[in-house]
Length: 271
Image (tube, rainbow, N blue to C red; front, side):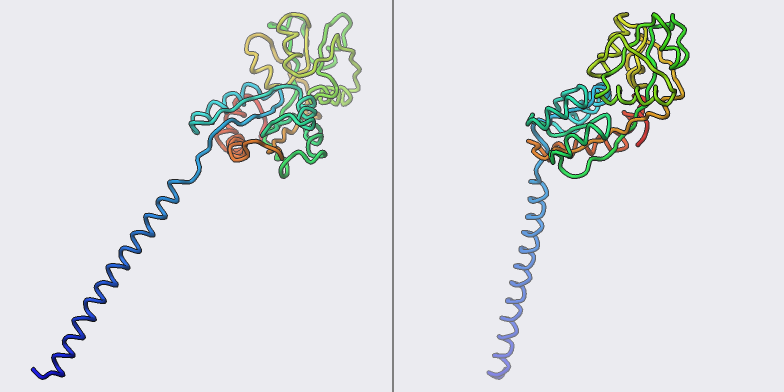
């Protein structure tokens, strides 16, 4: 073999070794990149911590159920609720009460928060609710219409006019051309319902969802004027939410098919 041929063969061997080395390095590099991706995906932050939800009293049963489902789906989270009259809750939020989510029983009460720029983004309507008359079991006073509530001697309870259920009741009365003086105005719908359950009132104008939640403690009477006073329920993340990521996930559950199934089961109407 000539010296020239030997040199050529030697160069080809070196080139082959270099190519092999490059392939090995490339494989290692690809492997490292893949492991980095896997590591990045596995290290994505999980939801954790407490999320505080201020919600209209009429949402108590359904939101409590959704809260438990949320905690089950996201170990390490805790959903704390503050249920009450939407106007009172809104006032607390605008006064600086720490909260992540606000679910109101009317756009008007949500506006108290949005007008003060305390909501993050635009509130979304997630359900609607309609009024019903709650009477004692068996309906001993034979109440069959909204007009019947104006009968002399009948003890009727309404929500305060500043509360969504009270504003809706007044709207229904106006639609029927009726005037009614209740024995008391209550600060939230659950308080109005309780008056009937304790037999301190003969009837109360509440939501269908509350009548359903009370089970056999009361009896419901539908009335056509309620169609003129259906309330939209908006929900929003709050601007100074202490735990915004977890709050957003809870709102997503409320608006999901799973959440809507729970709410529909409680008697709420679709948005």
